[in-house]
Length: 357
Image (cartoon, rainbow, N blue to C red; front, side, top):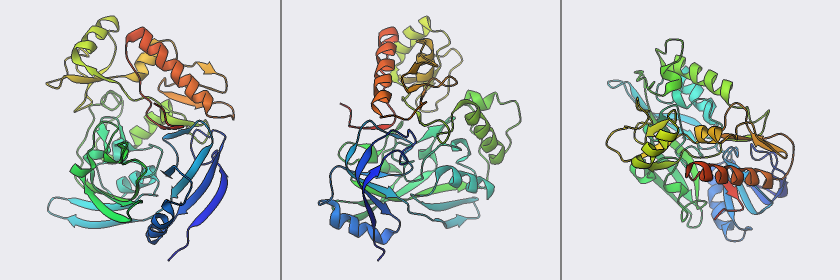
């Protein structure tokens, strides 16, 4: 059995992409599946709370972390089965693998299904927790199962797609009673050799070059993201800071009269309707948080050592080293302004410590 590497009083700055200053009381490095039993054996004795961390691309530390961080470094990619008749395969990928590297490898090997999700920062294990999505595609469409270890009881469990309870930026693993109880060990994907284009998202639908295979979509998504979003290694950030708010269709119609160009999306397809309002039989719809923030005049706002990215209003960035409290202050300011102007409440997408009410 491989021994766990355990460190005390570890700097948080390099453990999350927002690079806020602070310390974690304890850091545990998980590098092998056989170490999971050691985690369970020590779980009750370690400083609480206990959080599992990937690359820290969807978390904001607004202060010192008084508990234990488990850094998930599990590696490996395996093809479990291939159906030559249907040109599909099931791949199992370990939780500590870099998400973008896995997407790039799958596309390079001729598989389709993940190309719209290119260049999303983070690890494979973090992806199902919030059901990551981009450019009209969500992880749930390709994910067929998740293997996870329940830390308190020491039980390994396999969750099929239904058991994962995926919804918009949500899953079973994100529920209050389950979050931080599980270590995701691996994620199973069903991919296809047959390209099935999903180009309804405006940025892809209007792309100036033909998108005829998974590689061309992958390249287009990378180009679009790099033109709009900052590299966390250069300008610290946690990606999209707010979820696109879900509202009733009637409210969206009222708001659309005030903001005629407001993008409105169907929850099922993430596809904007021609008039921005009629989105099918589902009553709740999604609004563009970035559009609302920009219309509130907050795009490019500088707030002490942090700010709203000048090229994408949904991204908060860190301009100078400092504590995470400034990030929360800026986020609260944005929420207050958008609520006052448009009557829409914005919810943060990253997890925040200390926990927010």
